[in-house]
Length: 188
Image (cartoon, rainbow, N blue to C red; front, top):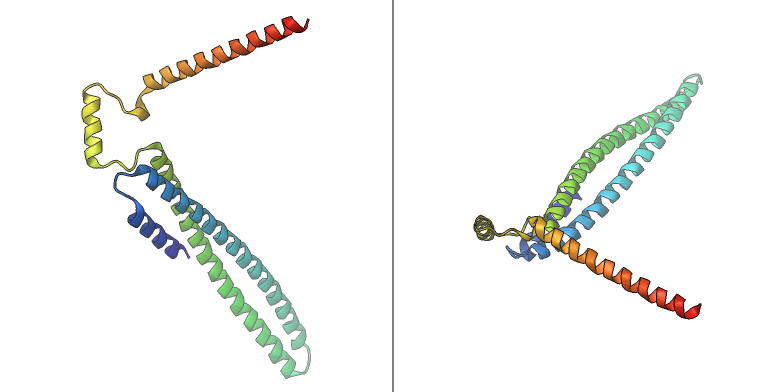
């Protein structure tokens, strides 16, 4: 399950992402992230189901062994043989389910690690860190050397935008307050 998901993700990213298109890459990473989350949830559900099956099988094994001990007290060898066959069958099933549970835990661990890496790649792509070509990075370094700053790291521009937003908000509050004062003055 995990290998098929990983192969589809790699093919999707390779086939549909242009080298400099960070938005498209972010969108594809988001789709892959959602699909991976669903796969991880499915794997968790399967792990819980296997764990329940193992517990049920262990209970049936304990019952079969108890019945085998009771059958051993009977003088009927056929009943003893049938009881032992059931106990052997349940022991084998317990071993298989325990192995299956261990493999599912390992696979879930790998999938969760892949999910973390994919989440980090998606966050990075959304922040704009990915998707730039080496030529674009060189151009940005040249611009920064000349005194320009990148939009994602331009703190002064962000501060100016914040100040303008604050002035607009203050003006809107003042206008609303004036409106309310006029309305109250006319009504009283």
